[in-house]
Length: 130
Length: 188
Image (cartoon, rainbow over all chains, first blue to last red; front, side):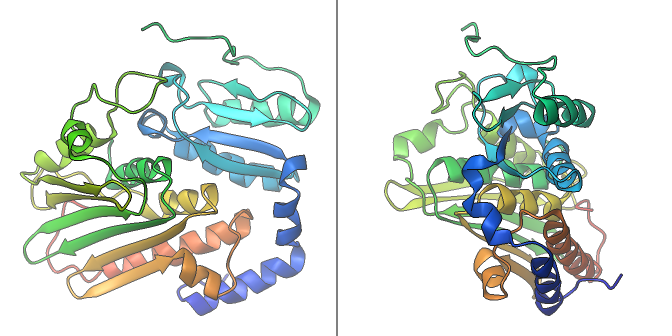
């Protein structure tokens, strides 16, 4: 494949991609999609949240799951970073801790696809000891 | 933080939390004098001089979820370990500018890391914010901004194909820029 070096190359690429999927359509239906928030504060970054976020962005598209992947700050679970909040349609958001790419795969295959809960959920009523 | 790209993501997150709409990230490298200035400028809520004074204290944070705040102290540490310094200018209602200077010939200088990878994640994760990225090496520079991408019809990076194209665009241009260094540097 040709290398992308100039803005013109990028523009051409965008046009090619746009003809395949209607991107605008997708953004307007955000409410109905799977929403994933990766915690990206100092603690998250230091524990490898970048790899996890990249994995979700790539894999969800590969596996044809319509999702929005965004960033959030620290949720206070620094001990369990990287943490990821997953909100399925019509369900309460769930926070998973110690997420690496292996765990992310499990979350996609089991929780996102079938709704089955997997290990590593941080209970909502958990509070840090001050 | 093992590289500057991580600091970039971390400090930019502070701007995002301060409700900034425009965030300018710049790396200005002077290869002859062996210096690098990493700066993040935003138009967020800004801070009072009292708050700015407390920033480098690791036990200060505006969050309520935890009692430590290490982002700025880590940045101060990595620049000071190369005999550089950290400067913060902030005004409530106007915004904040944070500048960290590094001596790139110092063995404790941390590498640049995956600037493109982190930049793409910032763009994907924060669609409502205008980002400007600049890497300047002496007189040569590479710029990328949300506005410039939008002008070329690139306004949605959520597709993996498009985000990797932008990443490749950044990497190719940065690689070319770094090839122009006359002196070796600890940055990459």
